[in-house]
Length: 327
Ligand code: AMP
Ligand code: TRP
Image 1 (cartoon, rainbow, N blue to C red):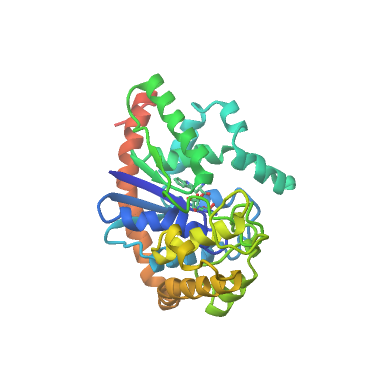
Image 2: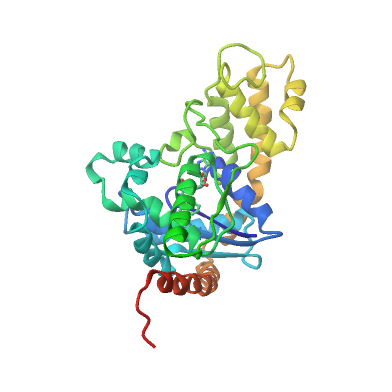
């Protein structure tokens, strides 16, 4: 299977990104042909700091590698290095109905949040995302729940393209993790953990003390029991999900283990599990920091490999759309 996914270089990676997306990627790279991108062109659709942007992009590559993405097994590259993404995005713009883009909840949310900068790029964001996926003839797109609507749009654009111009593009499928597809905020467990609200997040490279502080402070529910009940106890349910995914114990086992114990005992134990679970990522991130030459070499190689695949699709797309080819 051909796999494609990406993460925007905005803020640090948090455990939602890890459990919703990256953890799946690491498993998938063992038996599939995987392509993972740092999607910088998506990140610039909202206000950002151009002075430090290239550093943020490099730090994202470090985080990818520290999490266990392996450049020997997967193609790892920066989106803007493979120009075919933007070329295909333009062509797909002519296929994608305006009404479909207007329905995108992420666009609605972000245009509320960035009222003074509702640019055309933000609106067309899902078309570029469709291009990212379709240019590699991707079979599977592993993402968290919030990206489901965008992948659905990529599917419908591919179908419409094929219907109009012939069977050129693979129609991809989305894959969500069975658990952890939507990790909730530590502050407000009715909202998604999101980089744009740092206080809601547990970051992968948070120091042990910070992890403990954040978990002990995490919003919980009234009552005393450690039981999974998403409606009545969203806070404890979210923490149980995180605990289960980091410990490998099922939620049922955890409920049994913490029967009769209080929230504070449960949280202390969870913090310990997270400190241990995230230790290798923290350590590898430190090891890779300041190894710019090595990181850039990986990204360069990745972009070259990706471009071979991307240009092959572009050749077919251009031909099927009737764009003149000069010898
Ligand atoms: P982003 O941080 O928006 O670039 O998201 C990168 C990946 O992480 C995407 O696949 C998202 O669906 C996933 N993701 C982001 N936030 C969460 C969350 N709170 N829970 C689960 N997955 C998430
Ligand atoms: N929009 C995705 C996010 O915010 C990132 C992304 C861009 C992506 N292109 C993609 C994810 C293609 C999967 C496939 O999380």
